[in-house]
Each structure stands twice: as structure tokens, then as C-alpha cells.
Image 1: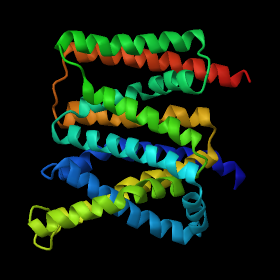
Image 2: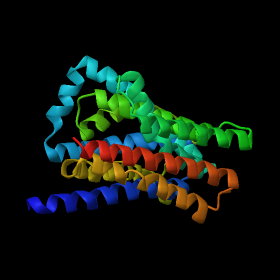
Image 3: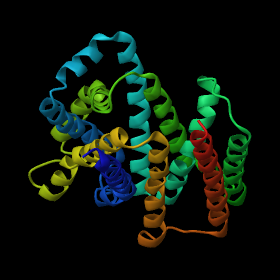
Image 4: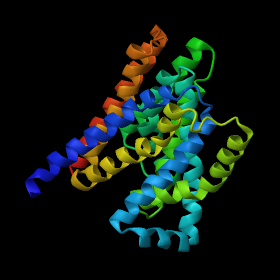
Length: 294
């Protein structure tokens, strides 16, 4: 059984990152619904689904421990605001045909994480890492110069997710309990909002619209299943190995944007993505060689 761990981990990682890469398909299916309403449903149904998983795992005590730790609770409140902001921008981007720009944000997230580690965790950058950071800035600058507008979706997605990763690195809590508490902390205002729009008749969720209502209920599964697979992979793979799988997600989103949703892919996009991919290649190779030398 021990020899099967790397294979099981690799398959779980492949499935998790592939599902995250395909997630625009789900949000396209509900794109007629306002982004904030989708976010509210995502948070509510994620709490419902994760509560079932945590109960089955017998991890309720871990959740209680988090709520008793004020410092950890405040940390997770911050991560909750970051991840919900990230989700909201991404949901909006999918509905407004900005999947390509969102994928650029997730491509640049590893580089952003490196810069955040340097600023907040006093991590020192190696020469090639500095070069990769510089290339990523150059790539985004090219898009700004070519279009005369700041790619705010890409920048917001990368910064919020990068900061989220930083905060979760500081917070000593397991993946399931952490996400459950993050969503539980803001589930009450989201429930109040959904009840309010339901009473006013402006909400989508109702017995008269079974298809959309069913899709909204699936938001918990869409959120939690990749996380479960990721947790399985994280236990069975080295962190350096797991890092290479993360590029599947923005690659999947990129392919969907260009070939399924026919979003404009201009020469300026090609240059920017080429620069970002080069930066990621340099960053990944440097990280791999540094890890192998330890």
C-alpha cells in the first residue's frame, strides 16, 4: 500500500486541479444570476456540505478548538474576507467573459506569493526568483500598455489569492476545519441576504425554478470536492511535486476561455502569457533544483 501513495496522490492532485480548471463551466451555467447571489449560495452550501464531511470524519472537536482560539479566529476572519473577495471577482469575471484575464491572475499567483513571502515572512529571493518576479511585472505591464487599461481582474485575483495563501500559511489549522470556519464566519449575513431577496421575490432560488435552484445547491460540492482531493494529494506528495500540478488550473481556464468561450486572444495577450509562462518555468525550475539540493 505504501508504494501506491505517490500514484494515489498524483491522481488526486490531477483531479483536484483539473476540477478547479474546469470550474468556469459551472459558473457559466449560472451566469444569469447576480455574482453576489451566487457567492452567497456558494458560502451557504459549502458550510452545509463541509459540516457533513467534518461530522463523518469526527473532526468536530477541531472546529470547536478554532472557535475557542481568538487569535486564530481573527486570522481566519481575514482569510474569509480574502477568499470570498477572490470568489466574487472570479464569478463576476466568468459571467462577463473575462475568464482569460482571470486565468492570467492565477498564473501569476505563484510569483505574487514569492513576493509576499519576501515582504511579510522575510524570505530571501534567489537570483532567478528575482528574475521571474521581474518578468511577471513586465508581462502585466505589456497588457496595460497595449490596452491602455489595468487588468484589474487578473491583479485582484492574484493578490487576493496570494494574500489568502499567506494568511492560511500563518494559521495553524487543517484544510477542512479552516475552510468550514472561514465560510461559517460569514454564513449568517449571507443567509439573511438570501432570505431577504427571497421574500422580495428577487432571488432565483425557488421551487418554480428547479434547474437553477439545483445548480446553486451544487455550489457546495463544486467548492468542497476539489478541496478533499487536494487534501488527499497533499498527504501523499512532496510539496515541490504538488506545486507543479497547480498550473493545471489556470491552463484549463485559459483553454476554456480561448477555445470554448471564444474570448479575444490578441497578440498582446500572446506576448503577456508567453512572458508569464517563461517566468513560471524559471521559477519552477529554480524551486525544483533548490529543493533537490537540500
